[in-house]
Length: 77
Image 1 (cartoon, rainbow, N blue to C red):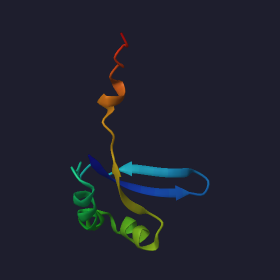
Image 2: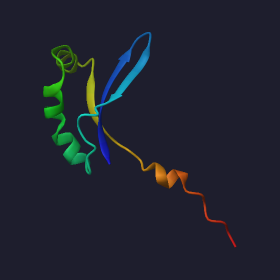
Image 3: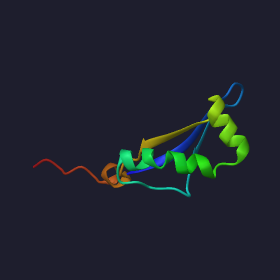
Image 4: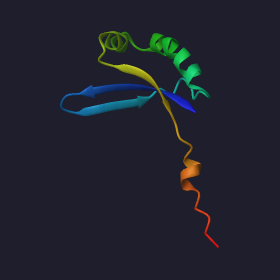
């Protein structure tokens, strides 16, 4: 599963990462990346300018399935 993130780094405050909840999740990376233009078009004008200037990045990130992490390991006989 893939989601779109908005990422920026602030000198004194550090990273700011936001999941774009209005889009996705996507089954493939290609589907996520194909939708980035549409995501950017929905951003406020200030954020669109930040993306253009390189101050804000839109990217796709794979989300791991937490259920595999939460399952107990099988005991050895």
